[in-house]
Amino acid sequence: MKQIITILLTVMLVAGCSQEDNPLHPDSDPGDLAGLTDKVSPTVVNATSGEVTPYAKLVVQFSEAMNPETLNQTTVSVYQTAGDLNVGPVTGELSYHVPTYTLTFIPDASLPQGAFILTIQDSAKDIAGNPLDGNDNGQIDAPPLDYFRTTFFTAGGELGLRDIEYPYLTDQTPTERRMTDRRPIIQLRFAGGPMDTTYLNTNTVKLFAEGTELVPLERITLSNTTVRFEPVDPLQNNTTYHVSVNVSAMQDTSGNPLMERRNNRYYPYTENLEWKFLVADEQLYPTVAGIRLLTNDIGFRLRFDQKMDVATLTTANIRVRQQTEWIYGSITIDSDLRGFHYYYPSPISDVAEVWLSATIMSQTGYPLDQNNNGIGGEPADSDWRQVANSPLSHTVQITEPDENAEVTNPVTFHWGSSGMDLSYFGIVIEGNQNGEWGIITQETTEADSFHIELPETITEFRATVSGYDIDGNVLDADQVNFTLVQSESYLHIIQPQDGEMVDNPVTVRWEVQLDNVDGFTVRWRNYNSDTQTWDLIAINTTNATIRTVTRTLTSTIYPDWRVEVIATDPGGAPLLDDYVYFILNQ
Image (tube, rainbow, N blue to C red; front, side):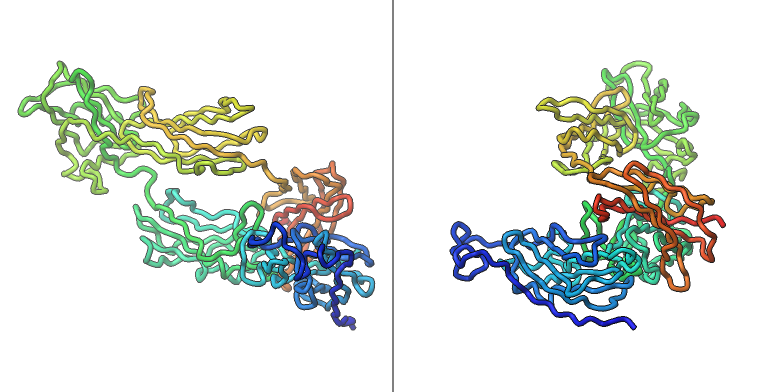
């Protein structure tokens, strides 16, 4: 029978401050702080975690002075755990050291072999009355999201550790701005789980057409890390759809709610996650982008919105007249295949007209849509139009990153553009070193985005995107300034890939950027479908220089495995971890 220990916590203040020097005393002199209001919630900057001795003192250090009356048996608790279950409370003595903002918990008896969790509720407050920001995300969240939790264990007790990591989305597809086929796969991928698959269904993931019409979905793949859906029927072409995910209803198997992860901090979702995508053919019916008169009245230039089948750009399909007189000129195809120059046999100053046949085709075989009704090749698409300059509207605008944004590697740039003469783009990225700007890279592209890994020895950058015509003239440009934030510490498993099927023996490799690493612990877990848990099967340990482990795994009833790599400091405390799921080919 397990012994149930009664919890009894007392609060003791460390002596050593006089009434005048004690900032917690109601009669102390506020000095220069008079009239100022502290609105910043306290956080935890250091706490006991990882493996401890049976006689360990548990320490929690706050970011600022706390009100000791709020650190009591109600707000502070310690429990022994068996996974997600509390086995029983641990009794002990609480004391708070004012000068260092440190709370200490001394157990009444030595800790037994096992795992433990220390929790501080958000009703713990600083001396100004601000509640604890336990998840350190800079905002006040609903309980228990702002509870601070730390786990630790005595030797041999790590199997009982509670999962306190929040799950989060790593990506979702199809992505916004992407064009897809008629049966796009809607996919959500998670980390920090495993996820509770009960909530990954068509009640929480929905698809709408044009914002209101619900589109039936079918779930085609389900695991603890990934869920995929597919429309029951093909989607309509040239239609905008949006996905709505009830993220607030999702959680992992330990009951931790799905959170939004930004800069290694977690934020609760306040509304459904939604994004849009367009279902359209990769190449739609081509349209006329515009016309420009050539200098000295020698002809005109006509541009389409996409690359054309040059075999259809002939004098039979392109005819020119001036009033009732035919003009027999010559056609020169633009090098980017998006238009042509038409040269008159001699200059003409009066207004001319050009007739375009509906049999003019795009490179992908779509007929011309000259009347812009979305359908090409109709009789009305063979028509005359006046040869006159189209309105000038050349614009290039960088949409990502924002001006003066802080970004991390790798950096992605997006821009929007308009204008008939825009043929391609040039992007120049400069860095400021010791007050002097120098070019880091310059590229040309027909795309509206660019992706690059920038040198982290430089922090101040600027990017210029220019739109060029076919002759290499700059028509418009936009510039954005941004700051590169140094990449944070990381540990990434690079083999096996998440969800990969692998053969015995299994090799796991990882890469790491982290200070104070003393070694690594590799845990091999097998999924038990009966209990819906990941049972620990084996453990490997390495020193700080080893980044790979190979192990022959025993065949089990269920082929689903999870391998975890934990970086530890010289004291054995975990620093960073990563894990992947794989299927053992048995």
